[in-house]
Image 1 (tube, helix red, strand yellow):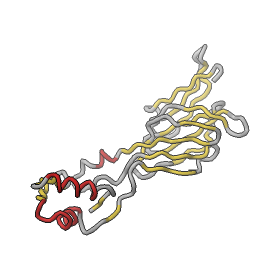
Image 2 (cartoon, helix red, strand yellow):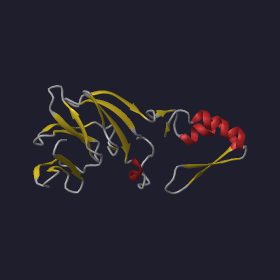
Image 3 (cartoon, helix red, strand yellow):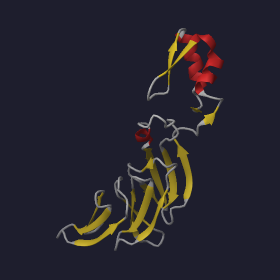
Amino acid sequence: MGDALFVAVSDTQSIYAFNRKSGCLYWQRNLGSNLRSALSLGKLADGRPVLAIGDEAGGVAVVEARGGAVVWHKNVGVDRFSTITGPISVRGDIIYVPQSTTETIATVDPKYECCRASGAVSANRLSDGHRLWIHRIVREPVRRGKSNAEALRRDIGDRLTLVRLDHASHAILPEQPKAVTALLVAFFTVAVTS
């Protein structure tokens, strides 16, 4: 922007504004969390240029490009595993925030019931961060019975062998592959939790 060059540094949790010709520092703003997305430039309704950036904890910050004052900084994630790693798109007073998930890290715990989180995209107001809408990539889990194993056994019967593996969910060993495949496709169309 003009003579300004903006750099986000995850290790220092900060955005820096430099003079792109001289290298002199205009300002630096620490946001208190590891920054993960690219910086995106936008303008507020009053014409002030601002920068939007996402962090590893599902937060988005909008700061003034001149001076680095924080306009707002809040969590916009869909759940506790949300992380913002992709670039935020700015269109007028709307920012589109791509959200990823760090749930895969939680799955190293053998007691963690997998697959409750998903990526998402949200639309938020640039001026104040208010969420306009959010779209999850995977639908919310729906409880379908006492457990996955019991529901599968009920629906498939003796055509299925369930084996419990350490650090994994149920493994399916079908004796009638085509019939079991058709039932599983229908069964897993909606996310299942135990």
